[in-house]
Length: 311
Ligand code: CP
Image 1: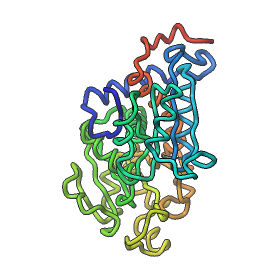
Image 2: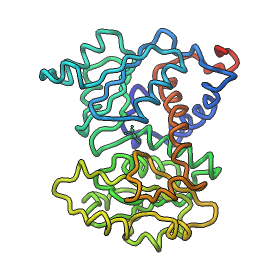
Image 3: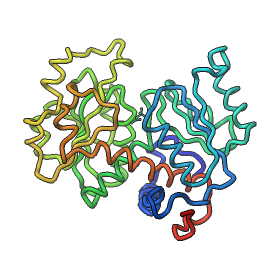
Image 4: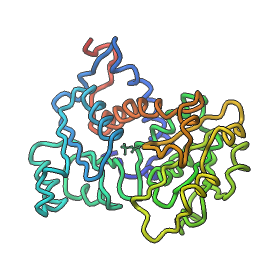
């Protein structure tokens, strides 16, 4: 595999290899093994055309824990503001020696274009409403760690599916890994093509919750809403928000996930986000391990010799 652009491109064995490698690398960064020399001499460029906190910082941390050099590119202050194209930006960065380019872009499909222009590996860190494959991988990693398996896990994904690259990547990856996914959303916040996705669709959250091992709340992406009908925040929260009363409908060992950033009080109540069932902070921590695994596997490091790390 040279690039990671879509979760749908991952076979079952590819996905399991990434999750298992992430598990092996999870101890890097703690006190006993600070970093590995695995990607010494490689350069990773973080090319973020859209805002990000978790993904950008965790890719940077992941690359540094594998001893890669990291170049961070932010649109603000760059020549993009003078009209420079994605292609010319990418070629400029490649001239500086990028072995891997991590890209976030507001245009769905931008990573595919980039992969035509650069020689190194392209990793999609979120493109428009299309995909966010490393988020799906870290979500699967978190589910497997918390619940011990992915096969036959009942995962309910709730909310603004229409604008969610996280939902699309999760549906593809979880299907590959044998989980059963149900999307719960207002009809106006579902994509037209959802009927072709490998999942169930439902509209009533209260009846879906007792049948869920995992409930994943999606952020309401008001910045992407143009023509889509959106009920008032109060109405949305009443029908599709997860508060403590609703959370009590879940089976005892079910977990609550959210990719972040959250709209506390809209799709998720603060008391739910901060509850012991919530994996939201774990998801962020697991993101570093999963992104280390992706960089390691794509950029062709030597064996992740945990014993040989820098202490
Ligand atoms: N989940 C996620 O992609 O968060 P950021 O936008 O902060 O990277």
